Length: 190
Figure 1 (tube, rainbow, N blue to C red):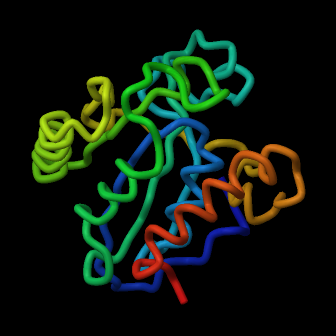
Figure 2: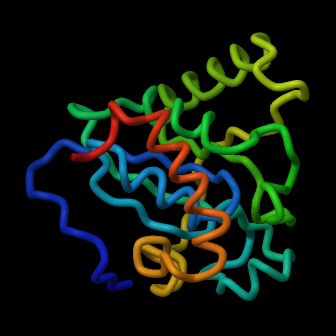
Figure 3: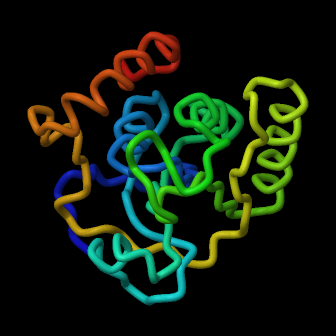
């Protein structure tokens, strides 16, 4: 897939990858793109049983896929723990198959880990948050190994940045982003 919205990662740079689902990938992408140390955010689909699904197929709710963002980052500038903090604070991990008005299994809260360390950290933080009572309801976020990831169509990539006047962007993403930028001010790109 060619995508002109993604800057190439400098050759020889040590990078790592995180994969999260927290509802609509347009929102998730907009948050993580703004974090210092994040090099690329790619919206896509994962966790399902259909190869190379289309947006329409995923929206039909029969493929088993979740809307995800694959986040490539520089671990010298941002840690997986910090990315997990953003993940937990930017969506409601207690609602099964729903984020706000977006309803369906493709909007499930999910962490797809890439290695044993990510798995351990995700499970640890989920347990700590459940115990803390941060939410009135139990966390339903799934934590599974990444088995597949299919990039979404080009028009989904860099969506908020390229469509800020679109209704969903103005009324759903922009207010969340404003709050996000206040909470994570110290972690934002300059």
